Length: 102
Image 1 (cartoon, rainbow, N blue to C red):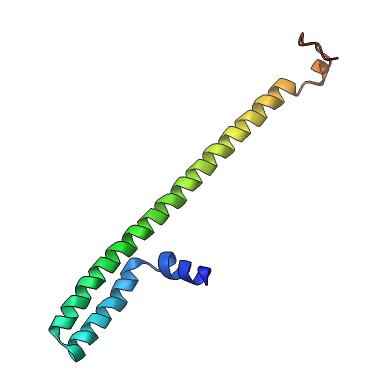
Image 2 (image 1 turned 60 degrees about the vertical axis):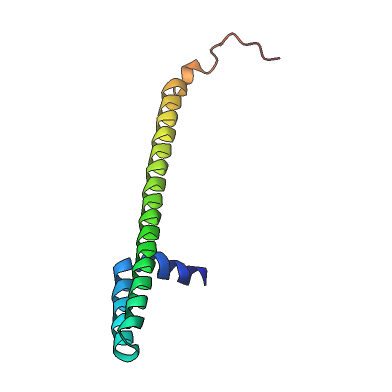
């Protein structure tokens, strides 16, 4: 159920929802009158604005997460390369750093 709500809310673009809503408003105008259609149109505009904002926020959060993941991976690769450069020489394994370990 959660996956279905995710697809309906974030995967389907807001303008497709707008097309379905516009068709519903046109049908409502045909069968229930202009006043009902105007009220439904106003509700549709508010719902579409909310949907568009939610989808923009979701897209921004995904981009931000990818950027943070890329930065973390770059930092990890840099640390690994620095450790390899520092400790990669087998001749330095027995070097004394001056710290006594008993």
